[in-house]
Length: 254
Length: 254
Image 1 (cartoon, chains in turn purple, blue):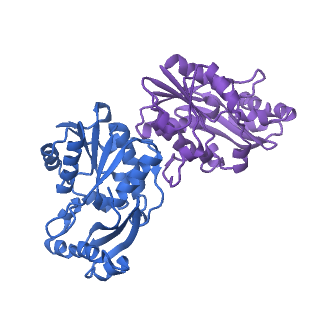
Image 2 (cartoon, rainbow over the protein chains, first blue to last red; image 1 turned 90 degrees about the vertical axis):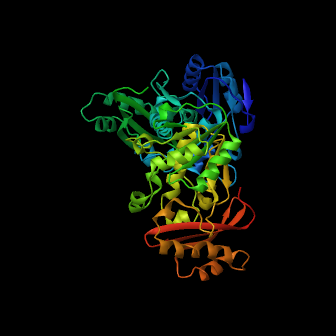
Image 3 (cartoon, one colour; image 1 turned 45 degrees about the vertical axis):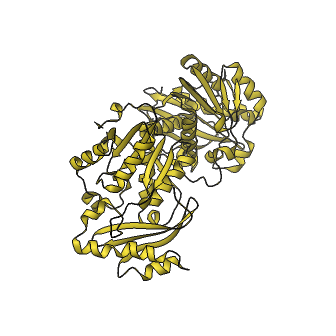
């Protein structure tokens, strides 16, 4: 696996699959790497904690970072090139052009500027890496659909693939932020996937999920139309950690 | 010359030079086509009156359109492929992702949303056509620099070239909108280039130009820092036609 830190060093040819990540790699990322590996000549992972998509500077500061661990995980999963630029390489002085997706509610409303940061960094990564396909996890379903909409609207020629959420045995969706939870918080966090799962098939899934949150305080619980699928999505705060999760209630994300 | 109306029909290989236009082709465009011809294996011109960059619907409605004339001019100038999509091809239902450049004053302030429309359509054209170089005229200097900034910020790998303004013998900058002027208006329009030219070297070029406008009402007269060059730019209204022009007062645009 080659580690590349500057844009000018990156020279790629052939059919490329890209997995954009912010590090904190876990089995959900590995699933994306392995799928990209099976479908692509060259697998590129990016590891960049993108400051532009954090609306909360404290959240950015405490976001998990462990380069050594992440390099080992990516290498084992068959990544060919790990692109890990500095913030200054991605946002040099004078940077002033943003990619702004349409309003989407839920994460878009709860985190002003978040999807602007996501769309901008993904467009830059697509332009730099030139992938045929890019891989996202369903846990961040809105993000994936924002990026897919961008790719279509701006004729980027990138197929945006959404793969199922990977969960721990007890049902908690894997997230880089899970390592920030205390054992007690981790236990309480199970209320999120359980509430969502129990609401599938309810007449009013939002009300049903809210009623089952077991004392967790939601940022939002919303039904979203994501590229034809209906998704029940929620965000909760547990201590100083914010977690999101979602389930498909109708149709399919892929 | 091949005329292509749909994105899916467009298949290009090799070193491509792109000249984005809104039609109404004149000798300024021909200069861009010929320069692209000299520097590129394949010359693509786009002809698309981009609704997204018009803040004024009346201006969009009366914008000059003459496809037959434009095809002949492009063909004679050595254009290989003329890409002329419909608005629905470029902005299909559900379109919602915009490229938003930073604030730039002058045209950006006078025409809200204008550079958003310019940046978005140029990014789409770059993604569709895949040019190594794109050619713009200095008459629309701010536009060219907005697009160059976008190409750098978003790592598009497109060299944005700015070529000198082509003028009629009496000094009026060529513009697709000039055909909308009556003979009397055309005569009065000469006040714009004359005022700008006379202000070069003045201690206060903005005041000097304003004093020489010969009764023309300016939307703005501004000194702009454009990628290192200092440019004196102005917009005036003559009847129902709006014209812009500029001169370099320090440094060079290229």
